[in-house]
Structures are given as C-alpha cells and as structure tokens.
Amino acid sequence: MKIVCIGDSLTTGYGVFKNERWTDILIEEYGFDVLNKGMNGDTSAGMLERFYEDVVMLSPTHVVIMGGCNDLMSGRQLKNIESNVERMVYEAIENNIDPVLAVEIPVIPDIARKKWSYDADYDYVLNNDILYREWMLKFSQERGIHCIDLCGIFEEKLKGMDAKDLYVDGLHPTKLGHRLMAEALALFLKTL
Image (cartoon, rainbow, N blue to C red):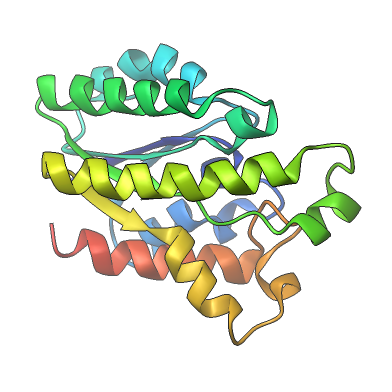
C-alpha cells in the first residue's frame, strides 16, 4: 500500500515538528508508505489543481484527501468545495487510485480568535463545517468511498479533555492531536 496524503496545513503539520506529524507517525510507528503532499494555506481548488502532479503522477494505491477549512476561512461557498473534492475523488478512481476522504478536525473559535485571527467569521466556518461533514459522510456512503471522520473522533475526545491539549491555535492540532489522528488513521487504513 502506497499512500499519498493531499491537503492543507493539517496535513503539512503546521505548528509541530516534522516527526510529530500524523503522516510521519504513520511511517515511523506503523510502517505505512506515506508521501505528505500537504501545503500550508491550500484550498480545495489548489488541491484539485495540483492533484495530477502530486497524486496521479506518483502512482499510489490510495490517496487521503483532507481539505476545505481554508476555503471556509476565506468565505468561499460550500458547493465549490464539494465540487472540488468530488472531482479529486473521480480523478483518483479514473487512475486506479483508491480515495479516502478525511473529515477535518473541528475548529475551536474561542482559541482561534485569540491565537490565529480575530476577524475571521468563525460562525460561517462552523455552520458550513457541519454541512460539509454531513455532505462528505453522505457522499462517501452513497458512492462507496472510504471516509474517516476525524471531526467526530476529535469531538468525542473533547468531551473529556481541554481543547488546549489537542490544539495549537484552535485550528491546528498539537503533538497529541497529531498522534490521535495517526492512531485513528492507522486503524482505519489497516482495514483497507
């Protein structure tokens, strides 16, 4: 199994050391063959634009697609994100690559306002995150696409933990958050 992970700063590993990123944990501790093609600040349109070069040309067996938060932070429409993700999924399938959708972790507005950006419209982000998650789960189920709900996993953890333990700035996971993502993805990928 050769896996390319395409996404934004959640994939790049913004805010943690390289060896603490979920992608590197999958390699070092679980023995997966993983290529990290995350790009800080990327949008779903940017991911789609570079999908052929960063995914298809590398001939992986699987691609983990995780993005959309930057689109919402910029006030972009949810339908555009869904369309871009759908096109990446179909491009993967057309090239005999098994797509895995990953629902991004939830944004924590109180922390993000203090540590990231005060002027972002977090209500817009949160409301659309809920709709985006619902769409992704429904789309993957209807099309028989693999999907891992990292948002749901984080929400469950947050019931018994302080968000500051899992988030650097309300958007990006801490070392512990990356470990949680890696553990969930490792269990999920072993079932494929």
